[in-house]
Image (cartoon, helix red, strand yellow):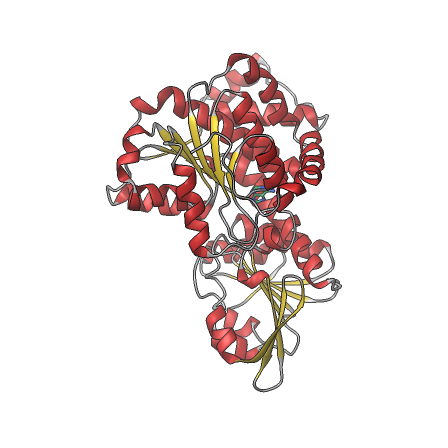
Length: 420
Ligand code: ADE
């Protein structure tokens, strides 16, 4: 395969992609600082990285940084609806091997992953574990040459931990998702803002006064609930976990089972990582005009098959918004075909938050390049030192300073004898 082989929607979109990338660069100071540092030291020299992660302007900043650090990179998107075609074109025009376009079929999705594997990677980067699973299930011999992988998201980390527990994982992986500077920010504030953004772009509705049902009160669900409340919506949370449900209650949200919430909601968003959260019996109870969407990694949280089967007619009434006319005359609106509404209908998380997530990806890949041969075939978490370094850098860029413990305070913390 040629060095700059690519498959994108339209290479002529490159110029507009360039502008988007330039804008993202101006909002990602931590990653850009690492780019300048590693451009000189080339810690990824000789590395071949296959990546499978949403092709967005922020991802382009990461890809360019990996290249500046010395890596050869081959990339595919990790969701058939999330690729920003202008960005993919700009990366291709810059000489990156990239195989991604918006609206691709599931068959093409896997074809694109396979093309990236022609690079014979030494490192892999995933968002959802589809690439690593593809290596394991179709080209396991490649694993012998792979030093390590990284994983961006909660769902992917769950898959990888299950693979490791079953003794099936063929190389070490870093759970970038679990870094504090990733999931306490990206998952909460990123998902919260970008999911609302996706809903508004797809519907143009007023959120104030609406009943907004959030399924799941993990980091992502909490972000959605907080931001919907901020827009004046009345938020209802559904949960399967007593502790998470209690947290939602004490945050002031109503908590109830989906069977009850189904009849009340104007807007529903799933953020659970679990399949069949909204199914036929819920659709049967919904109000005329209800809007349904998902912000979890896979499109299985809303049972779309059942929704379509219940529909007399499905009409794409706006981009990313399908009107499903029920046989009883009610209309239910499905956004982004039940795929990640924040990436399919909007642009994903804002650059400022991806700055930290992707700084974590970069440092994790460098760690794997250096230490992969010494690591066990299991899922690792990033070091406290890495988290601290990124937090300190980010804090500086937002103009905030912190206090420093005195020697006496440190002694006090470590002294168990002083009390009342
Ligand atoms: N996941 C969520 N938002 C994203 C973004 N802007 N870029 C890449 N991956 C993302």
